[in-house]
Structure formats: C-alpha cells, structure tokens
Length: 141
Image (cartoon, rainbow, N blue to C red):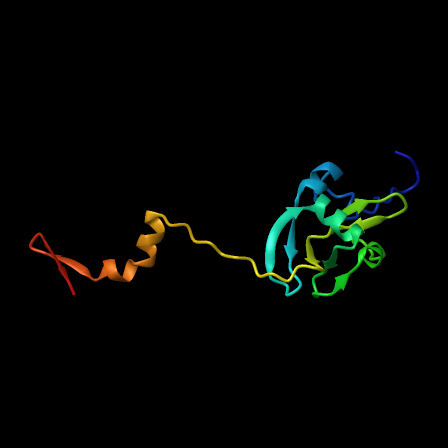
C-alpha cells in the first residue's frame, strides 16, 4: 500500500452497473412511433426512421410530453437527457420523436369490425345470456 490515502472514484449513473441500456441507432430507427392526425386522433404506428423523414420534410411536427408541437429545427434544438433516447446527427443529437402529428391530414380513421362468429357472439352476448336450460329444454326469458 502506498502512503497516500485512496479516495474512491465517484460513481455516476453511467458508471454504475444500473446504467440504462441504450439501443443502437439501427434498432432505434426501427422502433415504433405514433402518428396522429391534425385533431390529435391516432391513425397509424410507423417507424422512427419514417417519422424523422416526415418531420424533416415538413409533413409532420413532433409532439412532446406536454402536447407541444415542434418543427424539425426546433425539435433538434431540444436538449437530450441521459434517460431519453437520442438519434445522433452530424453536429449534435436529436430526441427520438415517439409521437408526431401530421400537418395535412384531417380524416378520422375508419373503424371496421370484422364479421366473425366471435364478434357476433360478443355483440349478442345479452341475447344469448337470457336463455336458460330447464330440464334439458332451452327456455328464453
């Protein structure tokens, strides 16, 4: 041992074993992003890569946790925390746009219910629940 007292090195979240696992850029760009129409109704789920392209092309705006919208330039100027995912750019890093809203899409998504036996039974559940079996014969109430 040396005569100098040893001072333990400072440990940060990054140095500790409990550091959050980071995705590689390829896996990060293939992860999912929610697409909203101008009325903030969900219409689609797309990849982060496509969301970034639409954001850069001016077709969409990024939405943050406080429901504020940002264009590409202002989204890139946002600071990236350590716990948030980021995409590396040439000169900086950009937060991953997990939710985007389209600027030129007003339609409400159509909901189609498939005509299946399961859906018919779930629709008519109350009707089928009213029948009872009395002495082996079905009786409707």
